[in-house]
Image (cartoon, rainbow, N blue to C red):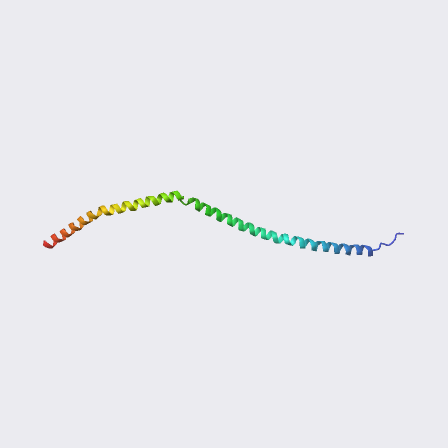
Length: 114
């Protein structure tokens, strides 16, 4: 007849294999735990980078709409010219103002006599 099957060597091999698998899974978890933390950090940095990119684009668009230095210089020159023209106009209007004041005084004097 047949010999009886001995289970004790199978149990010994199964327990040894179980220990090896457990040790391998522990090492795997230790090795990959850093990569999971890094993945979270990388996704956070990606979000920050996207936000910074949007801000840079918005600032760049704003800067493009600002006048150039030469345009500002031309505006300063024109403004200086306008101030000079206004000063000249003020000097030219002083005699007209004096005539209007004399005419008003004369009209007030005529109104008092009447």
